[in-house]
Image 1 (cartoon, protein in one colour):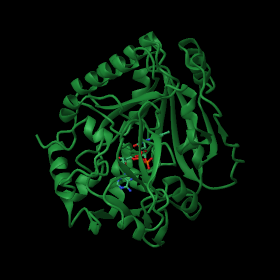
Image 2 (tube, rainbow, N blue to C red):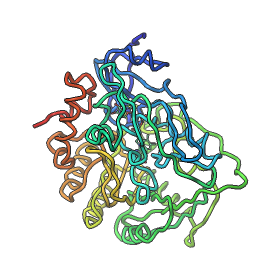
Image 3 (cartoon, rainbow, N blue to C red):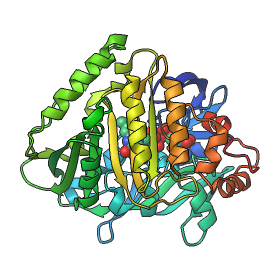
Length: 434
Ligand SMILES: Cc1cc2nc3c(=O)[nH]c(=O)nc-3n(C[C@H](O)[C@H](O)[C@H](O)COP(=O)(O)OP(=O)(O)OC[C@H]3O[C@@H](n4cnc5c(N)ncnc54)[C@H](O)[C@@H]3O)c2cc1C
């Protein structure tokens, strides 16, 4: 197997790594490699998918479908296949991955290693709760991991950031769906209280909120709730995908431009709301249509802050939104979601509550604002999402993830020499057992 020297980056384009990359095409070629950090499509924003000055194995060519049981909906796949590809093939047959993150480019290995959540987390829980078994490669040896027979290793692998071995393949229980169309209802929420009330009373299978992170005063926390149900019928013509051909100039996301954009975006939904039928990708993966949209933030890239706070911490959520609105740093990409309690691993992000995700261009005061928001999330009993993080400090992380010692112990057993560590693991000292 050839190792190639390459520079690669997290999705936010702030953190980069130069190192050796291998891209095996067969499981036999993978097994012959020395242990090294495995990465997927690098859709994590920070350094979860980076190993600077070291080796990393990119799993995207190991993307075969190994079997599907139509009676049970159990799909056996190699870890490099993307959730978007699974949805493309199986939605017309009435099945979808039970949990899909906001990009279809995430691989199954990446979804397991971050125990990702989707727009149905309040009903369906996290990705790992639908994983029946995983084949892990540990020091060249293959090992089957299941929730019943190897519960400690399973819980350390789900959300385990690749530290218990290379995920080679997995069996996923798919969810039945009505077809590859979505009926989507959009409703305006005029402020945060109204938004949270809409979430709490929503009966929809899928729900997600766009939030105007520049709004303040009486409009603080206003946004649009999208509720979706799968369906079938005439497929509306798919819109052409576009790409961002160059790094955008700094003024593209200046505060006045973002405020005007957000106003218009909010008002495009009539006060009485509206219902539309869309291809499923437009609902689940709205940003995937614009290739390289991360270039909109210019050469310096961007950060995403994502936290979850418990249901009774809405006061903290309000304070965070006030801080963000007054900073003038927010971009239009900001999301509010209701989460249920479902999580599959020691280091899984979800908890019952509300999750807020906001993108900030990497400039001026962004890092100090995000540090303050992290403190506020921690003080509220919440946590931040490691898949999105590039800035957090180790000392704050351990309180947010109380099961980290169990994770560190299992990772030490699986990889005693720390050959699977990534930049994020080192920065946040997540393998430390102290
Ligand atoms: C537009 C956008 C929207 C998103 N929306 C959501 C969302 O709604 N919900 C959510 O939860 N996340 C979301 N994410 C984050 C994304 O789902 C996760 O970062 C996911 O892990 C990315 O998958 P990947 O294949 O790119 O993995 P990478 O980013 O390449 O790697 C992620 C982690 O997985 C490990 N890993 C990858 N493959 C393997 C393997 N085969 N074996 C062992 N370890 C492996 C890596 O070491 C790393 O720690 C979003 C990201 C983007 C860009």
